[in-house]
Image: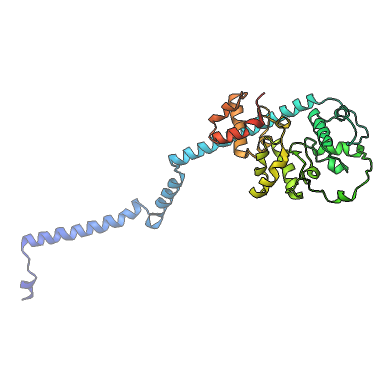
Length: 315
């Protein structure tokens, strides 16, 4: 019976033999592949690592443009700094060339004339302002008071300080506190704090702020500029205005074509970005001729230009 169960026809026996041979060949080939193609690391780790290293080595076009732009920016910045230093050196050398000889001697700023001030090395406009201040009733009571004169820089004052000899004056009782007067008219470009404080509505704080604004701008062009003084309230401005006057000829202008960025930005109406824009325009265009040359700068509005025009000298 069992022989009948395991009986195969000739075609079936042939198929079984072929199937067995195929299985054997497959096993042999599979076993042989490990000799011909050895696997050094499992899961293709080496290939993945190599692919990751390749990806990291790639740089996108945007990154290349960004890198080039950064290099160009740094190069322009370096060139700007070098030219700025050269310009500052040139200006300093020209300033030194213009210095004239002077003589130092003991003096009383309340009594000497303008010629004596000039002999001490002070500029004519400083001597003129001092005389006008004295003419309006001003008096220097100490060397420190003289240091506040517009145009006298700290290094010059330090040089003159030991030569200042102020004669003693008899102090009156009412000198301890300035008497407010209703008949006085002060000139804003020459008055000192003591004279300003005689005006009704101007206290010590206002007087100092007015002097500071005058020094920063170069002088008042109009009495209405008092409203721009730090801390000035509209109601106080209305009280003070009738007792003030202005001589615009005393205004000290900025020489645009040689002024540094620091000198330009020291003016209350010109911030750092506006000062730098003027400097860059001057560097590219050359000498600026008038206020119209600044109209191309987006940092300035027409209102800004009208405001700073009287303070700029294009010679």
